[in-house]
Length: 178
Image (cartoon, rainbow, N blue to C red; front, side, top):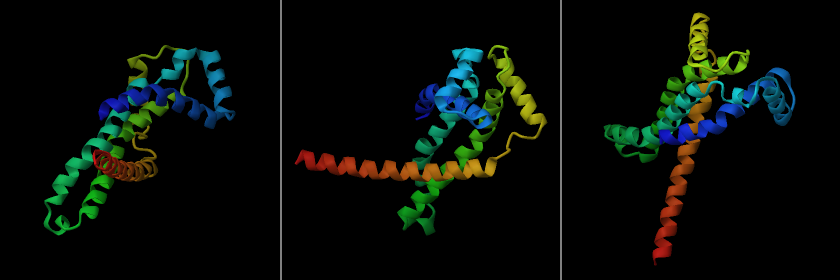
């Protein structure tokens, strides 16, 4: 599951950098992309790739990998054992909360790196500088509640879709096998 997050970083890292600069400067996605690349080079689009990869791996791992584990554990609790939907909803929401909490510092670091496009090359030193800066400012968990609420909701929705698709595929297989 986490590998899917790593792969998605190839698209999400440059897209998020451009979106941040759209918010900062205005303009279309295409015009901001061209402006960033012409001013800095195409390589700059991958500034913040390391925290993006770590964030996406943790996020996808939490919403795909944690839910079944949490369902098994929560299903063992006596008052919940007779309510599979409650167990599932708690597992999906808990996975979202855990994923949001684990990934938020990485997102703060990535955002700081992507907002600052100074001319120096993208190196681990720039990530370390972003970590120091964000930590010194006490901004590692800035925006935690709204972001984690979105992630919790996304985890719930994605797991709902995953469950319904799984049920539909299983029904289709049974029908096809007949």
